[in-house]
Image (cartoon, rainbow, N blue to C red; front, side, top):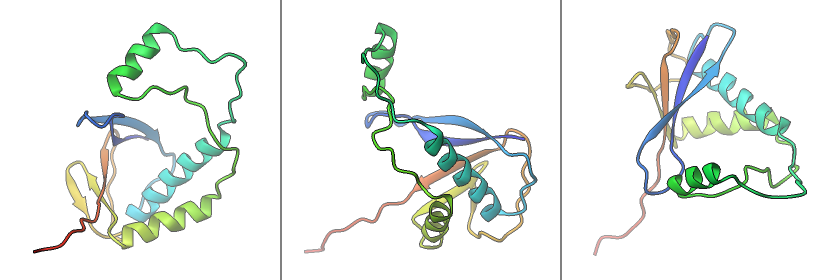
Length: 139
């Protein structure tokens, strides 16, 4: 089943969200199940990406123009060869959700509980919003 998650486009000036597809094969029972599948996929993709050590670093004019439009020019290489454990990433994600450090929207509907039943259909969109703590003082 193909689903989408929304991610902010690279660049501080842009406020656009980009839909990124991801695929799940097994049925999803609740939000916790979906989040575990998504985090597992992302960590596995990160671990499979080899550390790039190219002989010549160059970008085509088109790649340079695209990167400049987004506000960040990079070569897409992985900086560290460290292996990230999936179970640690999953536990960190679950703790972050319980601590309300991010919000999950399913087709513009807020999901508040990890264990509530979730009905997922083809091409549904999930939006993840990172919540930041504001600090300051009142005079």
